[in-house]
Length: 234
Image (cartoon, rainbow, N blue to C red; front, side):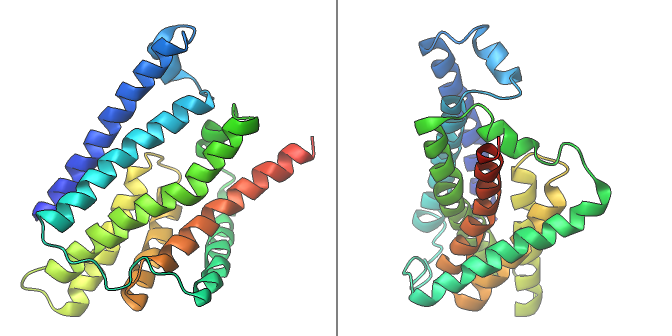
């Protein structure tokens, strides 16, 4: 399916652009050891994470543009129009985070917080605020638009030779798995895939992207609040 191929290419292009921006950032800031050292840093500086996210989102944006312009995917009628009732999805996002935490609790994985530490460990002051805004608002925005607004819908509405129910189920499962894989964290995959299922079902049920965005943003915000509370306690 052309839209799925374009989404994959957009993801790869975003990764490449992220590396390019990181390379430029290392050169401009005279980072000790250059890009090679930066790429191996356990806790990279905030600007490196910000540039990486920016590059990735450019790739996402290109894939979204292709889906609408060349793939002829029609936007949902009110996909980004907010309603006061959407605030209720904050509870859904928080609940998803708590449930997934309970699922992982018996396993006691030591590196489960690696993605969060990677983003925030070296971020302080304005850099911390910027990364916080990017991960709680901008990341859910771009990810919902691509994974649910494009990939899920492209499968659910375009699967040929399948019943409507089968197509929707396939769209939910595939988009959720790709969402989990895109984060590149093996331990996080199950939790992210489960979240992806919930988010895709929300889009299918509401025919909008705002509910899934609010759920996703509040899910991410729980981790942010935990970090702030941890730092305040030190």
